[in-house]
Length: 288
Image 1 (cartoon, rainbow, N blue to C red):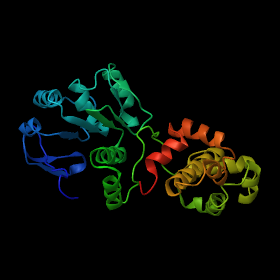
Image 2 (cartoon, rainbow, N blue to C red; image 1 turned 180 degrees about the vertical axis):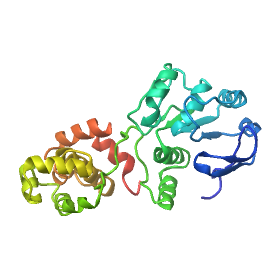
Image 3 (cartoon, rainbow, N blue to C red; image 1 turned 135 degrees about the vertical axis):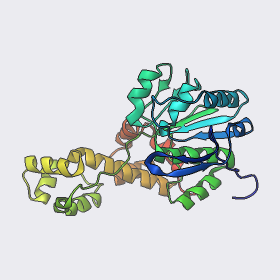
């Protein structure tokens, strides 16, 4: 990436080969003395929220924070930062699976379970593995600018950037078994008509079912009610338009994605994504 780019190194309490979760072997080339001169420390997933953290690691992280190093955790790595007291009185996040355990063990942390990542300046936390990539791209953007972050994202084949305040929800429901093929034509038809006002009756007729049967089968196969699925598809399409078309008026995007009015689109962006269409476009527009 050119001159001045990050130099990476790995460290552990005891250098050498380590067995990670799932049997993966990782080699740490350095001991904790590396943390005495590191500008940015990334703590990966930890073995468990209640798993003890070595005192030597706690002391090394506290010393690094005291001298001004940035420290970030990914997913369950929040347990290490919390044990070191680095999150006391701060906002932080973690994967939704660990929220209750972290909140119970560390009530002094201002935990926000509804975001992808949080940047508190010198301490940063990410919700999960994919959100960790978002946080890393956020750091690259801050350190080297949007062009560098977009270049890294293209190499990784991931979106250029997702706002930290975006909710932890945005996975597209998948038809769960081969019987989902019965609804596949309807799904394609709906996605091609997101700008139209399509109700439950029309969907059921298109699928050749009664409304009651259709609602039950649709939820069995997608995990959500037809109306909720349609709302998420409209949100996803609106996000794509905001990313790809920087000059298209927001009213036109609201119409094209089926929200009808900009006020309605704003409402759903705020309640579902914890952001606004304007903020989303400013953050994620391709080419910025």
